[in-house]
Amino acid sequence: MNAAEPPHVHNPENCRRYLGSLGDYIEGTLGTELCQELESHMAVCENCRVVVNTLARTITLYRQMPAPELPNAVKERLFAVLDLKPFFHNGASAEEQQAE
Ligand SMILES: [Zn+2]
Image 1 (cartoon, rainbow, N blue to C red):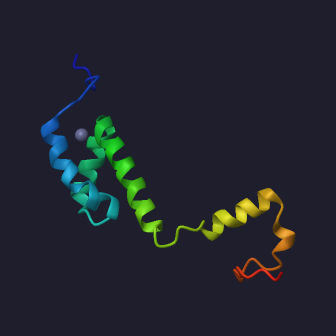
Image 2: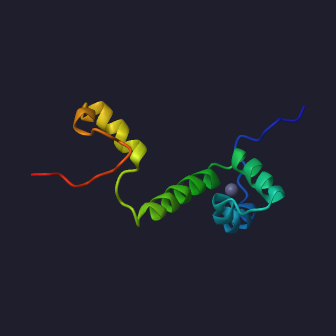
């Protein structure tokens, strides 16, 4: 009668080992084996999940920095929601110029 999963698995040694690979994991440059190891660890370790989430978000933000503007997809959705479409004859050409 073994408990399938301990309620709280906390192994700082493991975490420390994985933390060094989290960056690679998010970048997608981590080896498949390590990737799977990390994922199964994250399944039981909220700590690492949070770190990955935070790191991923940070990296995403960082990547968006050179272009702080909203991505086109978001823009289009926003325009649609705001019903601004009529003002943009063609969404294909992103003309920022506004006459008058
Ligand atoms: Zn962990």
